[in-house]
Image (cartoon, rainbow, N blue to C red; front, side, top):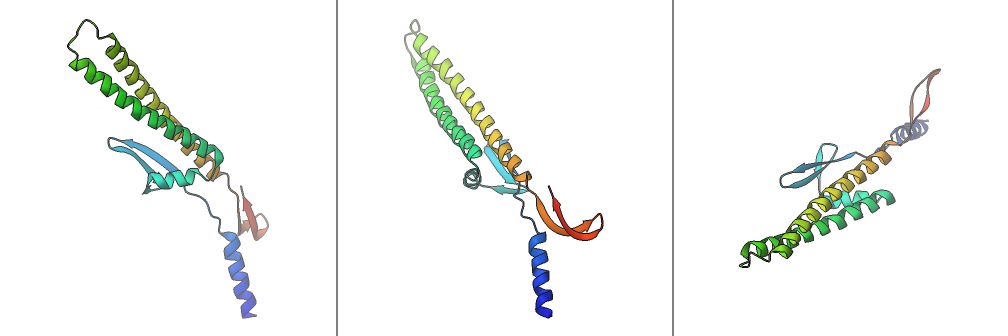
Amino acid sequence: MKIVKILCFFAVTMFSSSVDAQELSMFETILGTKYYEDNTVISKKRVASLMKKNRETEELWKKSKQKTIISWVSTGAYLGFFFTLINSTDTQNNTVPLVGTISTAGLAVWMGYSSRNLKKKAILKYNENTTDKSSFRFGPTYNGLGWVCNF
């Protein structure tokens, strides 16, 4: 009889607990982006591994990484054109460095902004998928106590 009670207790506790994923959030700082899982800071690698759980979030995260790389490359090109413009001795023929400086700076800003937006969309999509869970637990019903399914 004790074994049956113990088995029933373990069955009730096992079915009554629902595992919900924690929500992610990201905050921009001067030193970079910080990622949080509820109140704890997590690494970018952990966020990337969480994004791989869903195909949509993984695609958005990959696009964000590609645009970040393009932004950094265009920032390097911007610096190259800028120093060429500053160190140029020929003041009459500066159109190529000037156009290069303006266009690569614009590309760097645009790709950086787009990368951040894609990261935000990926995190929002991940959080959207974690909240659509149902739980099955033992609790109060309209007729007393019983199994309750929450959506």
